[in-house]
Length: 208
Length: 208
DNA sequence: AATTATAGAGAACGAGCGGTCACCTGTCAA
DNA sequence: TTGACAGGTGACCGCTCGTTCTCTATAATT
Image (cartoon, rainbow over all chains, first blue to last red; front, side, top):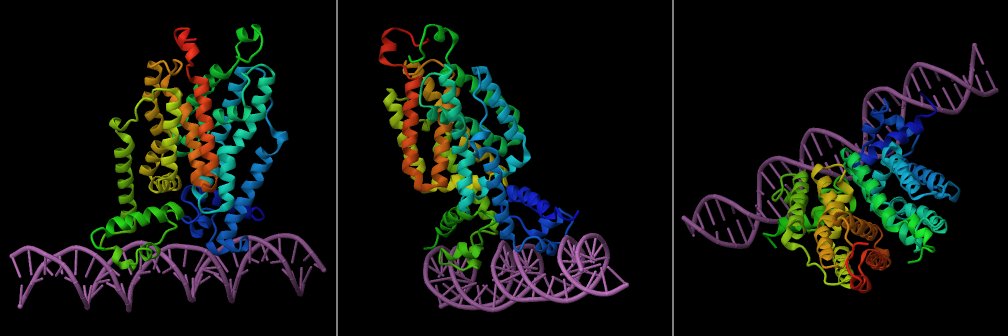
C-alpha cells in the first residue's frame, strides 16, 4: 500500500461524493475509510477541491474512452430481437457496474454547482445514448429492419425512456428487477411499433 | 413583515437548497438574504433540519394538491392537435414556474440522502406524469383518436422523453427554447406514430 | 554507510458552522 | 397601566471544517 494511494483516494471520493455530495463529505471521513489520518491526504492532493477536479478529469476521460469515440459503437443488430438483446445487455452493464452507477449519481447531485459536471451530465443522461443509437437505427433502416423515419428522433424516443428507468435504479436499487423488466417490455413495444415485419418486407418497400 | 417570516424562510431555503444543496447552505447566508440575523431564525424553526423537513412537508403537500388527486386531471383532448397543445401548455408551465423548477432541482440533488425526497423524486420524474397520461390516452383510444394499445405503456413512452427534456432545461436553462421545440417535435412524432388518421377512421376500426 | 525522498502520523491552527442565551422593543389583551 | 408575548438582536459557545506544521519510519539513491 504505497503508490496507489492517490487512486484509492479517488475511488473513495467517488464513493462518498456520490452518496453525500461534495459539500456533505469531509476529509476525515474520507481518509478514515482508507485507514489514513486526514493530514496524510495532503501528501497526494493539495486541497479537497483538487480531489474534486481530479475526479472530474477522470470521469471525463473515462467517458471519452468508453463511450465517446465512434470506434466503440456497438454493431448494427441483424434482427429486431438482436436490438432487444443488445439493449438488455447494455442496460444490465450500466445498472450494475458500480463505477458507472456512482458516476451518474455524482453528476446528478453536482450538476447545478459545477460547469463541467453539468456538461458531462447532459452527455450521460441525454445526448450520449441518443448519439450512440442514431447510427444504429440508421443502419437498421438500411437493412430494412425499421420503418424509415428520422433516426435521431427514433434514437431519442428509444433511449429517453430507458434512461428514465436507469435513473430509477440509481434512486431505488430495490426496484432494479422491476425496472429491467420494464426496459425489456418497452424495447419490445418499440420493436412492435417501429419494426418491419417479414410480411411487410415481402409486400415490398417499408415506406407506408 | 411579521407573521409570514416562516414562509419567507422556507422560500429562501428552497432557493438556496435547490442551488447549493442542504449541506452546502448555511443559515447565516439564508437569514442574511432575508435581512435577518441568524439567531432570529430560531424563533421560527428549532434547527436547520426542521427547515428541511418543513420544506419537504410543503413540497409533498403541494404535489398532492396540484398533481396527485384525480379531480385535477386535465380533460381528454378532442383531437390529436389538442394533445400537442395541451402538452406544450403543461411543458411551458413546468419549465417556467420557478417553484416547480426549484422543487425538481432540490429533489434531484437530495434524492440519495433522504427517503422522502427519494420517493417524491420518483413521483415527479417518473410515475406522476405517467399516471396522469394513462387515463388520458385510454380516453383518446375510446374516442378513436389513438391506436388501441396499453395506455400505461403509451403514457410511459410519451412522458419519459418529455421529462428528459425538462431535466435538460433545469440543468441548462439557456437551452430552453431548443428543448421546447424538441418537445413539440417529439409530440408531433408521437401523434404521427400512434394517432389514428381520418382515413383510418373511415375505413373502420382502429385495430390494425 | 550516509543521504535523501516519500508517505505517513499527530498536534495544532483559524475560520466557519449550527445553535443558545440574555436582552430589547412594539403590540395588544386584561 | 400593566404584563405577557412574539419577533428581532448581538455576543458567545462548542464543535467541526479544511489545512499546515513538525516529526518519524521506511526505502531507494549515492
